[in-house]
Length: 282
Image 1 (cartoon, one colour):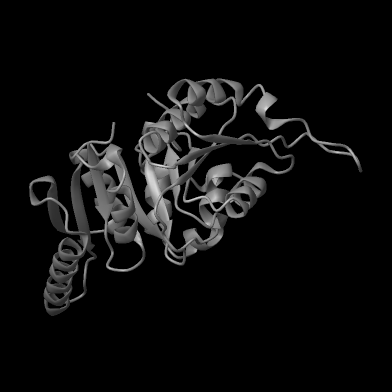
Image 2 (spheres, helix red, strand yellow):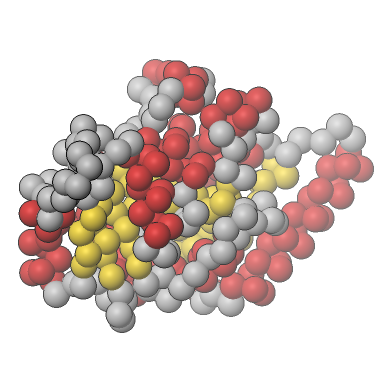
């Protein structure tokens, strides 16, 4: 259940359009929305005053553009390091979802350029919806969920079903990639509807009367997930992402993950649609 949404609004990007698209979905229509703008520290008091006033205008414009129910909307202007403030506010309000813009920087770039979204992605324990600045946000009709045998897979499926079940003419796309499968020339791939990993999701979709499609491509999971999402015109991609750091180490960015070949790192950079990263329960 999505009851509290934190929209981190920098004044640029597509996050407002993303929230508008979500508000057409019954799951989100009763949620309390907090729109946050963070003013970074400035060298002079004059500079701080100027940025503070600019932040107030950004929030006012967001409220006017979004046209949300005032009784379900808060705006918040904070000063400090945006990376820390977003994580802190998410904890304070017990957010069920964080929506953030992303420049889609690759891993090493995100370290060198001090990416806010990458930092929050690494350290926040809550679901995140990352919206790249250069994509076109569409009305949500096709939701794709990437499934495997991981603990977060069931949570991903539950989230995707909750999103799509009340969307008129909506479609749930179930995908499971098999990196070990190598088809020989002329060999026909197995029927994805018979994929044992997808079977529980198929049964759930049938039980709820949800229109679904199954895809089980071979190849590298990150690359194939992004390719399938583009080929099928997916509007939202739901992907599992484990809590990135143990509590004792959450004061530091997860450099080993940043420099590794994490599936969620790859997809957040290369997917051509918004990506909802679901954390493992507990």
